[in-house]
Length: 143
Image 1 (cartoon, rainbow, N blue to C red):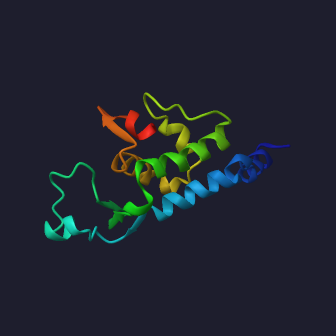
Image 2 (tube, rainbow, N blue to C red):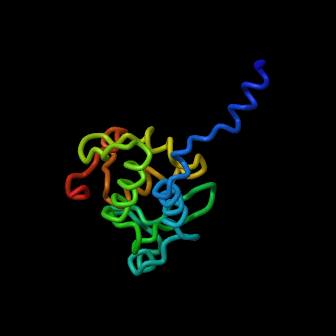
């Protein structure tokens, strides 16, 4: 096999773990975790969209467009449950529930266009806290 054939063959080699149901479900979850437009909750409406003083962010900008977190499905426990299933399916190991979240490993099973949603969702849900650029799993979220 020459070099060109090897390169072409690599294009079609897909990690079969990426097609496992929990991994596919987690990617779908990430797509649906945010709705179009800025947040219209009572607090955001009353404050004219000013989120200063909020513990967790409501409105985000992805690809130049405002989106809002869907609170009903993105509580820390919901995010953790979906992540744990995908992590276990992909890595064949339990998700460590303390310390720094292995974002690089998560990105291995998340579609590249969804990578930008990971940290904002994890932080906004309360699952992790950004400590000097590291996403640290919060004990109360993991409990």
